[in-house]
Image: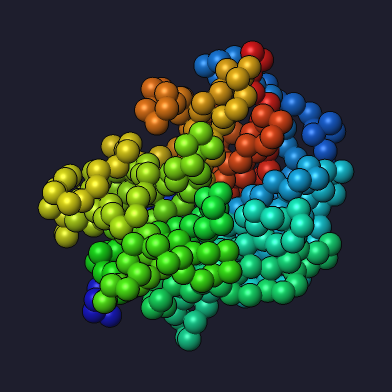
Length: 399
């Protein structure tokens, strides 16, 4: 892509961000308050309506600077990432830490910064966590990266970068990125194509690819492109635009992914090994200019996978979480998805893998929902992506 074309893409992205459109990361120029936290017992509940009955919403943390990723700790506390590069620990006792030491340097521009956080499968023994983030390179270059580290009370130790998106490029958007373990010791890392659309189809590059690693960053021998000339062995699937949600279905062990479309065409995919999910060759969206995507041949083509579900109008889907195993709950067998553009929480009802219903929650808050997690107690936790973002607890409707 020419320098002039890249500058034109940046200008379009800047205009969209200023306009407050869906997928853009906000700059956060407004001075943020010092975060404060409280226990659920101390937080006054706010009743809100849902299709299944009244829910109770509690503010556990306020004043976060564009929080992005949330991990639930076994002791009832939380880890929260802030896109500016902060990782904070929130205690079950309502205390919130200063930014933890040892977090890798991040590229906090555009949609870049500190992104997801997940616990290692053996966290109870190892205290190991994983972070995804936009990693600065030479000059203005950057790329999605993943680091592992051991969590301590005041900071991280044994920090090791286990994955780097290559090549690094000079755009500020579409870093992804979510992390998910599959129950067999494999770590999935979602990424965007960095607004360089053709890269999503180029197997010698990592932009626009879902990658699969072992927990130490090594490459599983059964990855689909291992040993193939001209293809990166990390790749699990390709043709992705900007994946901002990953979750394993506890009922089946299958991976589900949410992905931003352009103007329209947000998707849910169930990515399988070696398959091509089409971007930018097929899409249900159009360019932000109102014109068709230049590389697109339409909404379908032989050899390219169709989405499991799509939205003609983009809600700007973000994190997702399954709500299963709570047979007494009206929300059992649901999939929760954050929405940035519509500023709400989407609940999809499931019959197996089939989506049978859809509702919007938390619309009265008017906040961008960036991440969602489900606790073992059946409560739902979300992060709102704002200058003074919040961690909220949602108590489901009574059965």
